[in-house]
Length: 486
Image (cartoon, rainbow, N blue to C red; front, side, top):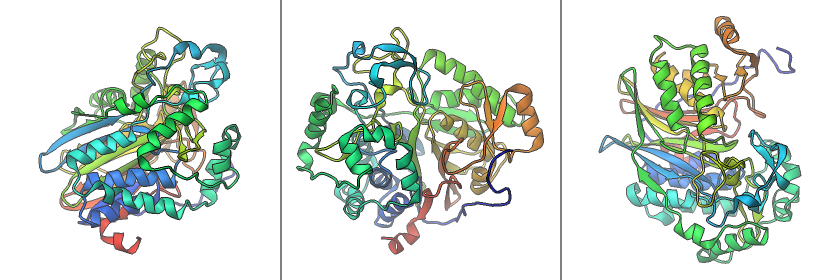
């Protein structure tokens, strides 16, 4: 492989088993917040709400209150799984004629025809109706223990402390510096050491965001926000080699994951070429009949002492979303309109009041030997393949959580080429090359060729978690250590 990186360097993340609760998240500080809530007597849902809002503070370019997503919950007492769907929707006043196709392809990771002035990608015209607050509220109302004020308090504390800007934050901000510079408020916040504008009180934040979006040319309305409802429902259930997988249904990556698992069930012991063939087949179907992908997301997984589990994925869509900031509130806004096909007459074409189709794929499951897990990942179209492989590593190969997360992976995201980790065994690389064009890419910090998973697992009464080992911010926090990190 021709690159500049060391062939002898080893990077790992250690997995610790505990009887206490565990939070695995894309940012260490957010995971610690979730563990703090568990230590205060909260359950996995309370910790999920706290972690969600904390992530919006410490990695605002991935999620936040302007994001959307989905949560899969396992309730140990009922031995039942639930899904909270809080995906984005297009505004009711959206007019598809305002997004004329001009030829070429969009400047992001999608293959949509390009829209005039990139109105579906950047700026206020790209903003969809967010769902995070409604989704967290619904989950907390149904299953939380602690008061709402208690579970959001750690995020407030983090916001008052301010973001710690290290080399990784600088790298991510620099990667999007040019589009951020097009919005004066985003530029002031991220590029010129600007300060967050003062808030005018929580009761008017929605109205302030709407006014700011409309002042910048968008069509979001207060009615869009007031009428939004998160949905509580049943997950997809997939039986796979004696295991049970519960995935988010409908407008997520869950249905595709289910189809891929059905394909793998026909193979005695699937290998990487089998993963790639299943993914390639179902990506073709998805791209022909549905929609496309999100590029920057966050995921976290939680297990508490009682065995309740949560897998939560949420996203602004692109990194930094629409690359605009609401100046009245300091909120970085999503670009969910980019999920839609700008050409008319397609299943996923632009239309008002329409649900966005994403690829986030949170799951909870139980192996044939009774171990329960919660998994998911960030990484756009790479998410489904990463979750599929991790499920197979746990179930088909009986790997520990630590070994599953450190095992090499490949990515097939619906294009012609498979991206393979050069650490794959030679026979697996040869089998992939016999079926697909293959290029190799290391698992690195940025840009990342593979998804960034976070997972937890419960074996008996022992809980453990792991995150993608290449990611410098992602980490696991234990409830029993929460008092030491406040």
